[in-house]
Length: 199
Image (cartoon, rainbow, N blue to C red):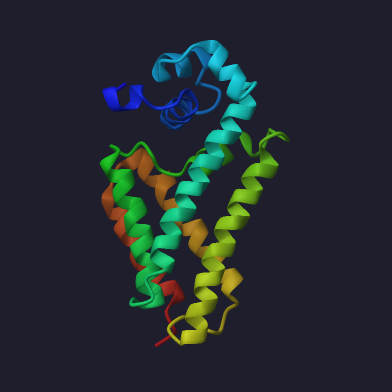
């Protein structure tokens, strides 16, 4: 923990530690004691702010999707770009964050979905909501692009958003194992081919 992190409120330190450790070890591989050690805060502070490991993990997921939404909003605001450039710029931004992390920080919602989505009634509604919000953001962008005339109009924006989201998630899952940046480059080009008007 850095000196700068040491002056942060306990809750913030816990959330940052949670994001780091859940990325590294998943939900089941992360213990409360490990979070406390990483954050450098007493156990009482953890239970005061979150009450349980499950509630803590939900708060960490909320923090992650807020970050993801903020990143998307930044690119959605770039109306000086074509819709395709907004979309691929967003994906490239995500990719660079992933690469700079040493191929560790892909998508926390995706990570929890593969670990918990099939078995946890506690986490599944939250994960489904987050993925639904992500799809809505993508669909809104693509609808605006259809109205501008630079996104294909022969398929509903919701269907395109589903396909784009599957490509994004799939790209990060593959690259977690292969650590091959060419996969990210290839998927970025495929997103462009998918959403642009047919030539």
